[in-house]
Length: 316
Image (cartoon, rainbow, N blue to C red; front, side):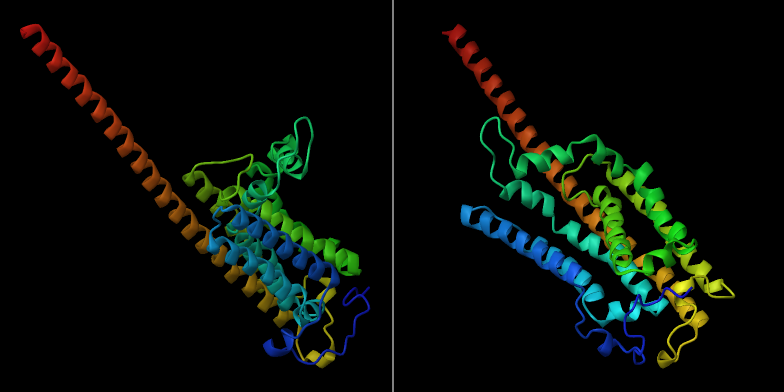
């Protein structure tokens, strides 16, 4: 059974980047993205009006993250992704690895906790419910490396190498659900590693790097498996539309190359961010140590002066 396209127009012209960037909005992702931007903007405006500061870089990062989602889900890239494995792989890599990193660097949870009003005594408002979710046992489980790393890996192998992918691609709801899953998996995987927002797990910098590199090689192996296959492995893309003028196996090889190459991008981005955070943390610790030493030195000087004064008093 051919699941490709779930009823969309199959007479697509050959893919080019310019044509792929034409608008073709998926309503679910368009509304979700605009709502995310509006809520984030509301939080920033609320802080600024209150006289608090919010880093411009965080806002730029969050907006860029949401725009990358809109780029792959609200343009013709999404239409081509239904019939071309290589284009779908670009969507998958962006929405599961690049978008989550940029969004998390925008610190949306920190912004929400600072912008949302505190409810009255004995009551629970949005801020209190958010804190409750962050501190819940469920959140501790789904952000633990023992859960996030296997989930990150299974999202590749268990999905593409079983009939599940074809089943999901057979309906609009299934396709949307799969893309939301990719985004959610990326967010829970990178959240503890990035360490920008508060969360149940705050491992040290070395552990974060180990968690990062524990998942990345499997992306590379997945890409290599696709590139080395001697026949199409995913039913949805076995019979691409003749109008595209592409061969299913060569398109699959391209998809594997994209998955293999893309695994390096987030690794470098996150590693640079972690090294920068580590450096700033060491600088803050050094300043605290210096201040403590200064206070201790002042106390010692005061004690010595008091001792000299007591000797002078005895002499008199």
